Image 1 (cartoon, helix red, strand yellow):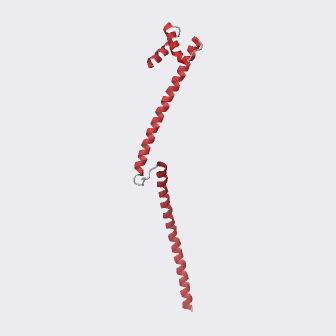
Image 2: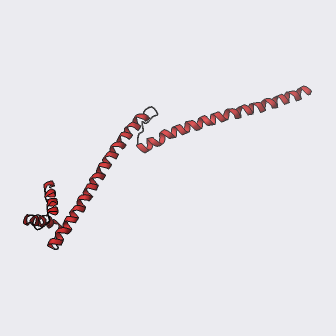
Image 3: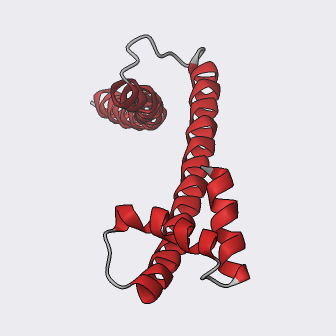
Length: 142
């Protein structure tokens, strides 16, 4: 009977050790599954966002380089357009000033007539030298 009890105790001890080992093995397995899941998600999301079904970890660096080049190109184009917009706004502002001057000298007139009227005044010498030189420079730009 003592042997049976000793055997039962040993079996219980072995069961307890087995449970401890299984629990100890579960932690790294869970970490590994979690790590794999995170890595897969890191590829799945860009695949869907960028419409790249063939995206793999091996070619991700090449795609990143491609997208960075496209980003740089788009940024340069945007900056160029911003500069053109700024120049257009400046030209518009200068035209508005000149138009208001012509209106002040001539009286009300249509905007599309302002250029010809201003040139006529310049030809007649009716406008100051400063504004005449501006009209001449603008005429050269046309």
